[in-house]
Amino acid sequence: MKTILFLAGDGIGPEITRETRKVAQALKDGLSLDLAFDEALIGGAAHDATGNAFPDETRARADAASAVFLGAVGGPKWDHLTGAASLERVALLGLRKQLGAFANLRPVKVFPQLIEASTLKREIVEGVDMIIVRELIGGIYFGEPRGLRTTGDGHQEGYNTLVYSVPEIERVVRAACTIARTRDKRVTSVDKANVLEALRLWREVATRVVRDEFPDITLDHLIVDNAAMQLIRSPKQFDVMVTTNMFGDILSDAASMLTGSLGMLPSAALNETGKGMYEPIHGSAPDIAGRNLANPLASILSLAMMMEHSLGEPQAARRIEAAVHGVLDAGLRTADIMSPGMKQVTTAEMGDAVVAALAVRVSQAAS
Ligand code: IPM
Ligand code: MG
Image (cartoon, rainbow, N blue to C red; front, side, top):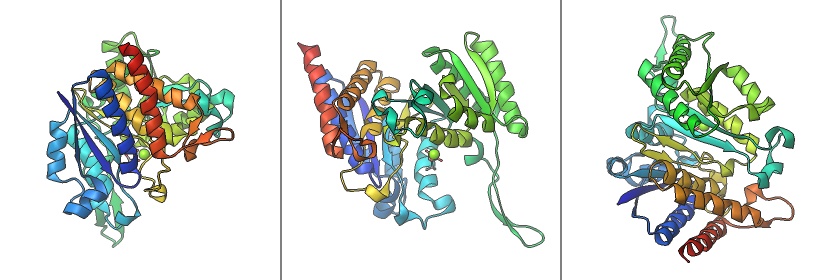
């Protein structure tokens, strides 16, 4: 029996998590998957209920689960929590660290049905299918020393440390190469080796790992500013991109706009054993929370990644993806991806439509 822990969190988190759980339940029933569901508090919701945005109880349930689903964390209500107490650091970075989830997979795939939603020209984005592998529990987000201090001449200064050890670089490069083997076997490593020692080392280690362990993979290197430019100039050149925590944060937001639809992009964060946490990349969107407007498809596609990477159910993953394509082909759109001639639906209607699209396939397979 495998357990999925659902952490709904804040903002639109509970609404999209509800739809995702519906889909999980339908697959469990339809495919007789040996799955159990659990839930716990995280983020602002946990802070308000317990005084801690990542309570021990949630920590223990995350450890016990086979995979963790996270809706979203944060909102203006908790903006007064800053520095080491910020919700993002306590709940989100805390959960990533707790799970040891060092490899953040952020696929960027343009849906043909939504191509007009991109701000870029059709010929630039049509057919984009890449994945960013972002290092997630090291680098400047976690490096010590960090903090605020007062200098000898009385000025306040803030400081952070960008640090990467050889094993930290090796494991994320290996993860990227392993994924590349299931795709086009090309990896682009993004660094700032011309300025930063830590990332000079990054480049050396990436080169060695690929040479010694993945001779079938083609590796090239880009400096981060050039990578940002290339992403917008000709994104189809990329297959797998591997990079540091902070560069991956920035480049994945930029890359998401190739698709024009933040509401469609899932993510996974995996540890050494393949256990992971799964979340839509769009965040808590407090402005539309509670209004049945949010797009649950990024969440539902994150469940597909979970089925594939942590639950050993690639067939279930393919069914979810096919169902999502089915509802888009049928013209259903939430507000964020609405365009003329399509049918606008609510969060719950979209979830139900995906479930219905699954059920057709489930019963077809059964007959
Ligand atoms: C992300 C987010 C987080 C990050 C924030 C909310 C801390 O931007 O998952 O990309 O920087 O990692
Ligand atoms: Mg980000």
